Length: 350
Image (cartoon, rainbow, N blue to C red; front, side, top):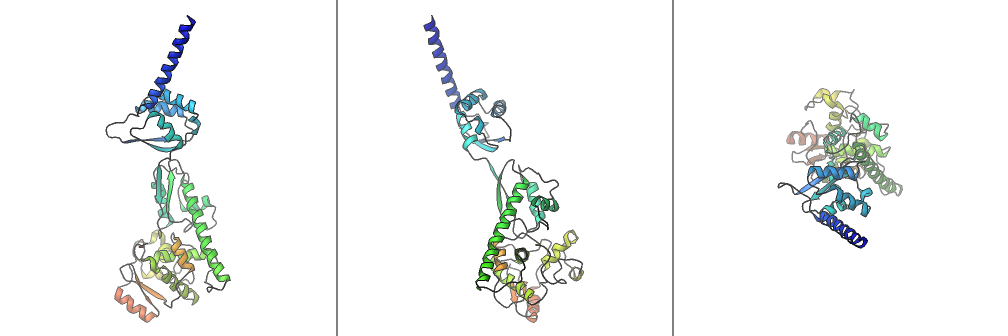
């Protein structure tokens, strides 16, 4: 009798194992219009609550079988937060592999050269699956979050940043800020090393920050990437000769919301605008836009020509002049650059 019970127990155990193996081999269930399922795992969620919710949703054949497999394999504790794409024909046992070893779904947010910090904040507010942990998301709150004593304008690096569901706005901002710090420091160190070896002449910057301010102006004025060093050279020579920079983008930046798309003579005469480089000598107080590495490099490696003026030709390029007389002729010919709301000579052709 005991022998029969033992045999039945063995057979029952084997049947249970075979049943579990069979269940784990079953593909997940999808509707006719689906070719993948996206599951989101939040921090703190357990596999047990997730598995039963997936079973209720109808795509996981058996939550209990999945949990048994997770316990036996020891993978239950290795579940990572994030979003995971589970393709069709995935077998139940493979779900755990995807959730523990696979890469979670990635999102991207891009910050563009020549745009302002306010544009960055708008993009972050619109970015999907990003936790808005800086509330409200304003330039002053970003400044506080980064621990900056001055305005945060110009202190985030323009690039495309990859993140996952559940990441925070502050993590992206911090990443972009550290990237800018590193790149600016690298370019400034190259400049100071060349200067110490007498390989170049000293530029009219008192700090790396002033080079960043110049780079932001170069970025806004650049229509063709190849002209960055030449544009930087014009502004450097004007500073060295104690001339005003006289560049529209700085004035427009200083006007803020008061600028309605038309730069007028009264704006150019306004001494109260600290960014008015038609009235105030030297650099503006802060950067006016996001500058990329190429613009920073140009600000620290300007062209060695002798031009002091330039005017947009309408095709993204500029006509450079060495004298005011020549410049005025060029202005009459090319009808001066457009003073549009989002000023830039033209989209940069990288």
